[in-house]
Image: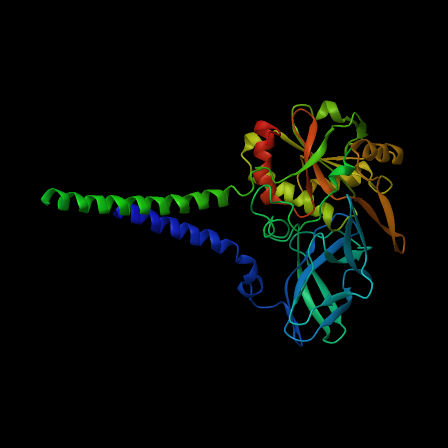
Length: 190
Length: 216
């Protein structure tokens, strides 16, 4: 009996642990409530970084958490180039394209604006030199309501922990990998 | 009476034990099915019609001819068509692949080749390709060619041939297929890895692609 009860306890524990995984997504905003890189009114900016490059282009990413009314990121400027655009990536069928996001990036009321690979990014063009790991980039963001805010971004080859920026949260089970992602059109692969 | 009383207790215990076992088995069964929810063990998106490695000769990042079928024979080849002025999807794919390969056992890693073919040959000369791919992994192979060659290559792969979006001031973006095509050692691709898949998916799939090819 003791063994069997032990098994049940083990099973229930495993079950609870298993069920717990599914709830992780809900905690996203709260668990990373570290010190923001910058603040402007009701907006707090986290996890900013810019990408290493050997060419004249790079991209900057960050997360804006909003505890107030909706706002819009209308403009970004930087110390490393005057050619800066707010870009979105659009995937149509098997092909992805990148273009300026008309009107800027919306920051939902009491929500988040997330810039990440495959979605929104601040496009930096006509750079004078390479960006290497360890460099920093000064970025000034202009929000329609909250105004301007400056932040200093570290330069990195990727979001930090490889995998975290892209697939990690969306899919942990093989075969379920296509959930919520930009999917190719397999029929185009003739 | 006495014997009956004596046996009833063990029977009761046995009955309880059966119930407990049934509950436990049910729970474990549930756990097992939960874990098995995705019966496919590959993260890669399965292609309806597998794609053979194109029979193409392009120019490598040292400026030398690169015979794709010959150079990738016997390897798992992760092929990606992009461009070096790509700030977002291309470097993310290359970075995620490089990080995954670093974490693989050496014996597995050495059976994987990563080939990055440009869709922007006007800007991506062999020297530009080399400087770019080397920042991810010096073993990555960067390929370029003439516009006709790189367009024909994309057609052979069955992916949309890249087009341009003008970004003003002489800058342009290249619209291209945003997924990595994985060829197994038989030089046929059965799976692709769209934007959104990264190190986690590679660390699961690469050892499988190397050890058993594609056999779901």
